[in-house]
Length: 363
Image (cartoon, rainbow, N blue to C red):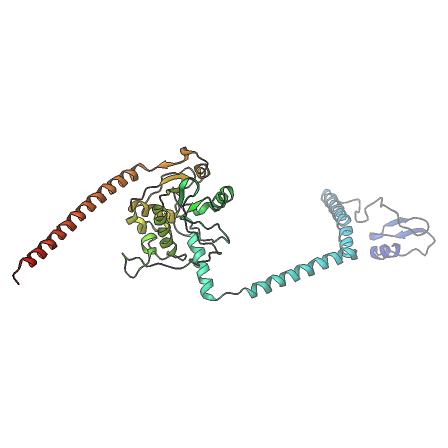
């Protein structure tokens, strides 16, 4: 250390006998006996002692900078040396990186195995856009399993659920878990992945719109989930009516008897049917059909539906305007039946008269 410092300063090297050594700028630095350098320097070797105020400020600034640099080195170098020199830590980091690379390769291999044709990918992208665009988000995700509703005679309280919001499928499962699958009658048609009838994506022709399916009337455009479900749903509702069951429509929470759309205006609404007001999009079509056919029903919401099956009448509400429409329909039906009977009697009398005249003709 003594030799290196002496050469760097431009002075001579003591031969080991002690004494003094030439320093920079012709100065002499004290050297302790035995040739060891002193721990601290009493005088800055770069300071001539006779400089101006500016040189003294520069020296002070340089000394402060050196102190900060020495402090940074003393704090940083041990950490760097520990990270680089610790073999166990290096092995641990290397093992972790190798494991990450293997996991990445496994993920890439799985993704490569799941490649889909372009048409399938385009259909999935179309569904994603349907969720992001429009007046409201359309629920197109399909659950894996769902209790299948059925219409049968003698259900709990003689009630049949004919419409239930698809946003609350957990509450739908809860009904069957609470009361049992053989107690709840339902005409609802859901399309889970486990649907044995495979109705998802299939369409049904509507006789009043030749060449078109129900989608044009229900949604204004063809939907990816199809409209075959609606044909099966109407058949279930007719079966429930024939069994004399009380039909029940379940609304969104706190929005009972709201969000009704006339049957003729469904196509105009389009994606606005999913505005989360009163009913779901397909529910609005179901209720519009019930009103069009003057089929009476009662209503409740998702938060009260379990009370309906717990002998609490306050949870049920009869739609007043629909009851009036039912009475008017019954009166019209009676009039039409009586008129039809009169026509049939007149036709029968006429036939009898013709036959009597034929019998009176001379042979």
